[in-house]
Each structure stands twice: as C-alpha cells, then as structure tokens.
Amino acid sequence: MRRSRAAAVGALTLSLALTMAACGGGSSGTEGSNEQPKTLTYWASNQGANLEVDKKVLQPELDKFEKETGIEVKLEVVPWADLLNRILTATTSGQGPDVLNIGNTWSASLQSSGALLPWDAKNFEAIGGKDRFVRSALGSTGVQGQDPAAVPLYSMAYALYYNKKMFADAGIEKPPATWEELAETGRKLSEDGKWGLGAEGSNLSNNIHQVFVLAKQHGADFFTPEGKADFTSDGAVAAVKQYVDLMAKDKIIAPGNAEYAQNQSLSDFAKDKTAMVLWQTASATFKTQGMNEDEWGVAPAPVQSGEPGQGTATNSMVAGINMAVFKNTKNIDGAKKFVKFMTSDEEQIILNKAYGSIPPVKAAQQDPAFDTPSLTVLRETLATSAAALPQVPEESQFETVVGTAVKELFADAAAGRPVTTESVRDKLEKAQQQMPKK
Image 1 (cartoon, one colour):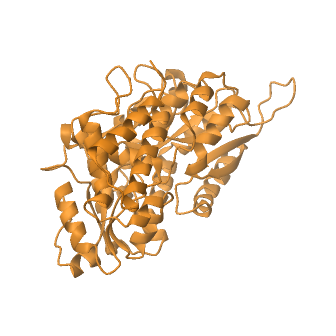
Image 2: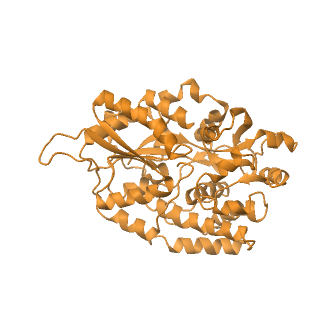
Image 3: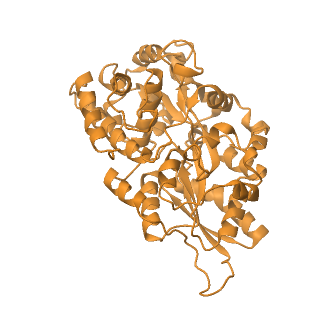
C-alpha cells in the first residue's frame, strides 16, 4: 500500500460498516432510463508529494479518456489519512464514487463488505485478461480462492534510501544490509542535529508494514493460518520491540518522529536532516522536493543476517494500489472501460513513470523507464523477498489497532519512558482484545 496512508477508523466502526449491505455508485442517471450516464466519479489516492501533483498527473489522462470515449471523469484526490474512512462511509450510505483507488492491503476487508465489483473471468476479459498482470500484484487483490475485489494499478516495495553525501562525510562506504549494521551506521550519522534514520511513528499503516516484515524475519505472523489474530507471539513482540528500539534503544531516530504521520520523514531526508529512510518507492517524491537522482542511493531493506531472499529473509510487504469499482454504479460499462484505460500498457507506463512506481502489467514493465537502478532494486524485492499482508477480512482493523499500539510505544520512547518486552506485549494484548472474536 502507498507510503502516506493511515487507517483512520476504529475497529468498531469498521466492523459495523463491513457487515451492512453496500449501496455504492456515485454517478447520476436518468430516472427510468436504460441509458448509462456520460460521467464517472473517481476517488484517486494521494500518490504524489501533494494533492496538486496528483491532479497535474491525472487530469491530462482523464481528458484523454473523455476524448476517446465521451465519458467525463470527475476527479477527487483523497488524502490517505481520510481514504479508508471515506470508503467505509460510502459502502453504507451509497454516496460514493463509481471508481476508486484502494490500498492493496485493504482488498480483503473491503471485499467482505460486498460493495465492490468482483473481478471474475468475464470482467477481467473486458479489460484485456487476468494474465496481463504480475502474479505478486494479483496476490493482494482479495481473499485467495475468491474472485478479486480489485485490479492492480501501481506496484511498490520497500527499500532503504540513503543520502550519499552524508554517508561520504561520515566515511561510510556502503549501505547497511542487516539491522545490526543499520543501527551501527545510524549511530555514526546521528550527531550535530542530524539523525541516522527517519520514521513516521504516527503513521499507522507504515507502522504495520515495518513490523509485519520484522515479524516475518522473526518467523512469526500476526494471524494464524486459520485467520485468527495472534498479536502476542514471541516473534511478533520481538518485531515490534526491534522497530521501536531504533528510537528507544539505538537512538538513531529523532524523538520528534514519533508524531510524524504524513511524509515528514521524506521531507527531512530531502533536506539532509536524516541520512536514511525505509520507504515505498520514494524516488519521485525526492525529485519533487528538489533532490537530484545522484544525491541518494537505494538498497534492499535490511534483514536479520545474510542477504534478502525467500523465507525468513523477507524484507518488504507487497505494496501497491488497486483500482476498484462500486458494484452498484449506474455506469458499470463506463467504469470497466475506465479501468481498462488506466491499466492499458500505454497508461501504465505514463502513470507509473510519473509516480516512480512499477507497473503491475507485465508488458508495461518492459519499458526502459523501469530499468533504473532504484526500480531494479524494487522489482527484485517484489520478485524474490516480498510477502503480502494477510488477506483476511479483519486486515484493516489489524492496521488500526496494532498500528496504534506501535504509535503509542513510539510516544513512550520519545518521552523517555522505558520500552520493554513486557510493555510491548501488554500493548499488543490490548490491541488483540479489540479484534472481532472468532
């Protein structure tokens, strides 16, 4: 899922929303007429450095679609902090868009609401076929064994971005490959008002992404194979503590980062205030903020030991954005035409190049624009060492309650309060108690 997203809704609200019948569909039509409207409403997620960047990227493409089809697309770019709550409200009120972007980790949760159009073989055929898409991207489109609830739009992975000049000034010759090396490198860089690593302690989704990967590296998961919440295993506790300890123990993250929630760590990196960030596909944002490509490097995110690869050396979640259609839209044919347009080879190259992401469409990936050194690292990560977050109906609640637990632990670390195995386990136990009982 995308970098600045935050699951801004409580577990109770989500549980109620996902159990109510969905209405969906934002375009108005003619009463008693079979004629489909010539407009679509589209909620796009905030992919650029700000909302205006997204409008500048998307509007020319929407104009192109209108010229080709005669269908006007009314665009609204929705900040990540608001998007999930807006979608959940739309599933119960019927006052939603026709087409929308969703973080790929929400696919199973929103699928269970019944609000989204299932992408069965016939619907996939209408947009060129399921085989056009990369397998890893399709793995985060809904519950396995069911028709996907969405279609991949942008693919991303986490990597370690590092400031080349700050590394050179500190006499550091190469980026760290393990967490132990990262802590050691970060301490060398944390001086004179500068910090080794940036983080976003109040960004619930980013918290989840980081601790999910660390849990995988500790041989754990936050759910059992049967889909039951399992937040207090030794591996899960160790993962959360290791992440928060980058501030609490290693002291390579500025205490103020405990309050960061919306790309502030990327801004600090661009301003040479921090030397490293762990982030999803951040190159385009750095360019927007005035950095030249030769000012930063990209390396695989750290592992416990050795090199990234299959199994316990997982070093990223399968990140990305999916495109979904509200099932009860009054313009189902137009909505599918729009999805086909946005996932066409040509548009995939244009859009993913603009955002610095990777096309989930196989043919578009072959374009030379995606052979840059930084994107090569991300493509290799997605192919060999990334894992999809659990595709369970309660995934969004998981992001909210465990992401909040990590946020509270960062607040403890920033205030100088001890972060212990016991305090971490207690936070995770309280988070698990907020999950639906099975």
